[in-house]
Length: 209
Image 1 (cartoon, rainbow, N blue to C red):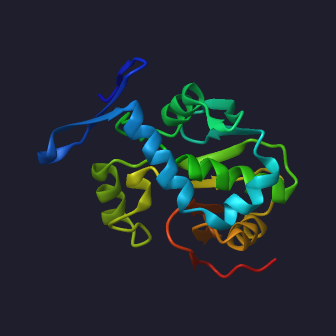
Image 2 (image 1 turned 90 degrees about the horizontal axis):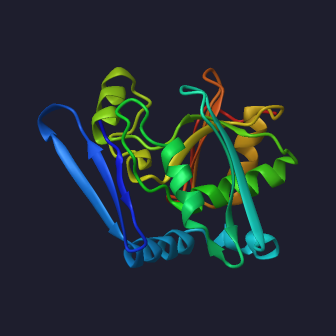
């Protein structure tokens, strides 16, 4: 079972357990490397960064995980910086719940959701269908469904599948598309929207509202 082994001031260690022949893999991020990653994530969200310019003082996010029932409400950005303890809590909730594998979630994903919630005029918690996926989980899901990408950004902590109570998922997908901040997938039958920090693109069911 994957677990967080240490969260010291100088080193965070995220353990990953993959099934099958790949066995055990360790991910070790020192603080400087993690913060460099935040900069890379932010650089990929130029359109969203413009929108965030007027909302940069304090950003909060709320989640309810549809599979585990876990809930989280946290201020993740304040005073011009991402808050590490809050990001760690996000990593925990958005872990691969099937293998209990933790992985650092791109803060740019949180920024996209923050802007999306604001655009929707909602203060409800996002319902999470899927956050991080380990390679083993992604492969199992890919073999079971043609809708799962082999190189999914879920495996990089750069994607999340969500609903927002009170907001039609087609409208949510339209708002996410208009952000021009990354990928958007709309799944009408399963009633969720995929949001990521990859290149700008859209797929899935036609958006009609």
